[in-house]
Image 1 (cartoon, one colour):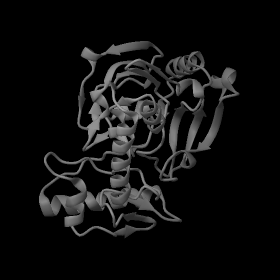
Image 2: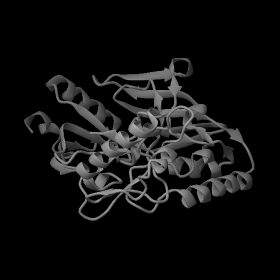
Image 3: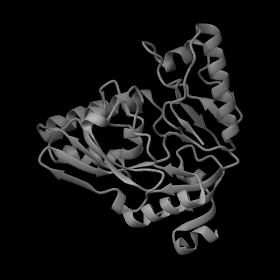
Amino acid sequence: MSAFEEFADIVKRDEPLAPYTWLKLGGPAQYFIEPRTEDELIRVVRLCCEHGISVKILGGGSNLIVRDEGVSGAVIRLSHPCFAEVKIDGHRVTAGGGALLSHVISETVRAGLAGFENLAGIPGTVGGALHGNSGGRHGEISQFVRKVTVLTVSGEKLVRTEDELLFDYRQSNLDELLILEAEFELQSDSPDEISQRLRKIWITKKASQPLSSQTAGCVFKNPRGQRAGQLIEQAGLKGTRIGGAEINDRHANFIVTHEGASTSDVLRLMDLVRSKVADQFGVHLESEVKIW
């Protein structure tokens, strides 16, 4: 750990990552780092770059699968409140990359700003949501973004404006190391009406998704013109279980974990799903979750 000597207060060695993920699975990080300021974050990233230490960014851990053997290099988690600030000025909303999407939704609804309520029930952070263009049938986060401040692997801070940003289904060209901050533009509306829409979306999601279980969100992306959950259900895979991992019987695009589950169980179950769906329908399912 000599490379991180000056950061001894914020670096942990061989820190288990399971508690930081929604699936509660996975091995340790070789170095686990939680910076307390933006300056400290930049210095850590530059140090890693200089020493050839690979860096991964841990957000809310909601769409992440960590392998049982863990992760080599550094895992940086933006857990300090300085990375989660939310500021509202008229129709403009500025949110830190580490801010929980649910918190930003609450703040914008309270301020009478419409748009983010369409993202109700989507877990994770603003940074993760932008990187993967999170959304659902009611809309995507990319609809509202105006500019994004990013940090590169070499520790350089850049501002990406609207004309430099490209978004598609569950992807973006925000491929720098991490998102520090983003600015969004929303529309004014009655807080009561926004709250009503929020409640409707939330109730619908709660009825169709296992939100109270240990999951990593939707496991597979929807193929063009089709729904992954329907294909998995039509393949007769609802309720299929390998070890402690099981395809949810409410929504087939969710894998839930039980006591004693391992990441290996989840990955084997995902391979089984891909194989069965490809054999029966000729469709290759692409992972929506990240696998470290």
